[in-house]
Amino acid sequence: MKKYISYKNSQEKWLGQIPSHWCEAYLQTVCDEKRNINVNNEVSLVLSLSYGKVIRKRDIYAGLVAKDFRTYQIVEPNDIILRFTDLQNDHKSLRTGLVQEKGIITAAYTCITSSSNAAYLHYILHSYDVKKVFYGLGGGVRQSIGFKDIRYLFLPIPPRDEQDQIVRFLDWKVSSINRLI
Image 1 (cartoon, rainbow, N blue to C red):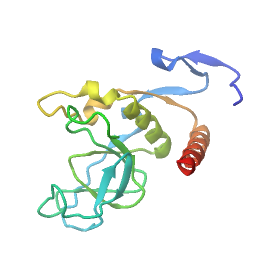
Image 2: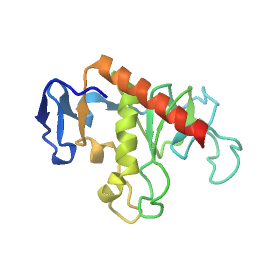
Image 3: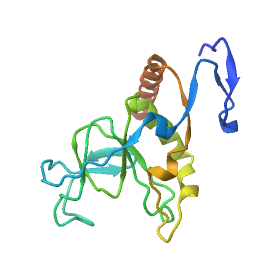
Image 4: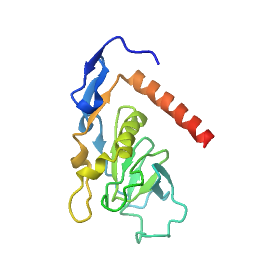
């Protein structure tokens, strides 16, 4: 990979140096929490967060199920789902997912949306997830957090065309790895 012409020190020590033309921003400056409740049961496709993917729920009547889906939230493609409940129990599962199709998902999850490249933002949040950063933020009996608890996560933000290029590269690499598996 070709190096950039110049670098600068990140404000976050763990990031080290970043290209000098990149910005750094708090999560709350590049995305918003979204709450769109399915009050009229207008959307019926039930989605689930499973192993870092937002997928169609196979059996909507298995496990813990709502009486009806009017309390679920409506999600759209490019929304990001964050499962920040019960942080004390499960340190193995992945807690972030990028929505691919319109549907509904439990309101217990945090949904964020961005005008930036959502896939780029998701890759960053996924890296926080893999590094288990979110576990240190939880509190209370069930150790749950919400958007207010992560809004000051620091992110490296390249220009949009570079975000797009990074996403294409990572998608290609992940696809290659999946084929090998």
